[in-house]
Length: 194
Length: 153
View 1 (cartoon, rainbow over the protein chains, first blue to last red):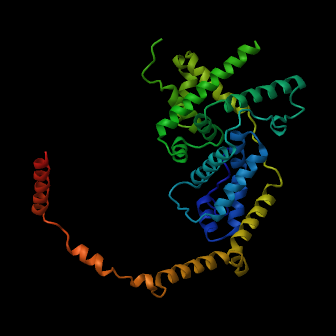
View 2: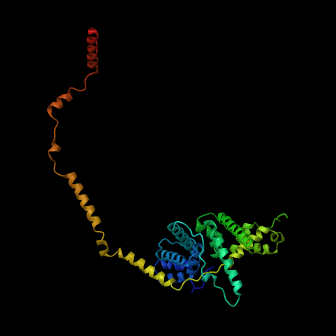
View 3: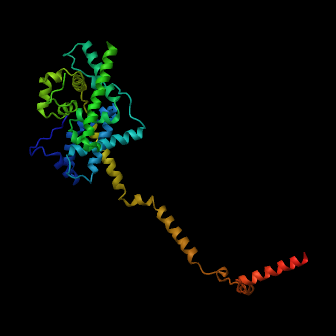
């Protein structure tokens, strides 16, 4: 999931917008919010499983963006933003004392177009989604994070390494292990049902 | 079946899928007989694909409004530090610190009392002058006492 970042003059780069935000440009800030709110809320949702908390944390990150004074155009804006988000998430887990063990099924996430599939298929898809979500949330934190950043946030391994402050090879291994564990977990679930 | 030399590792295939490149590797997975016969790789690929089933959630409509309200609130808190009346609530802190400084200054520099001018009595001075006693004198004295005791038996 990538936000729109056209290079056209009408759609300036995130980095340019951020530089304007530093000088207090509220319009640029709103543009950044519009571009990034969806990916950021989804990032938190995948990690927390609650839309309300996900939106609150995303707002906290945007407040930090608005107040930021130490932004430098060294890395991509997205890397910097997800780094802020990652820190926010760790703070949240620290405050809560633990990370959530189970995802609450969100009605919105299970909405499916009524005309396309039958009610039985609807239930099956909803169940599959719940199982995949449960399998993700059962992964160790680091694996879960690299998987979310890689699969759902469409970030490159080098960016993830920068966000999580670790070598690229570690990201490579963690993604591999995460998908491997996910595969085993899903296989078990399929066997249980059979 | 032995792994051909041109086949990338499973980790590399996963990276290619995640980053969308190199395309050759993605194409390779679809065409290579060896890769297609690898159960581990097939599980990895189907697990990766299974993640697509999860939908994206839509941000609520109230998000922007709530965000702007929180920023406004944060700005208010920040600006309140610049207002003079906010500082009156904390006046007791510098006032107390000032009082403590004054108190310690007074204790340190207060006018000298009789106690400050106390002098050692003359007797003590004379006693002090008699010291230190020479070691030889002490030894002689001890020797005398010892002899007297030995004479008495």
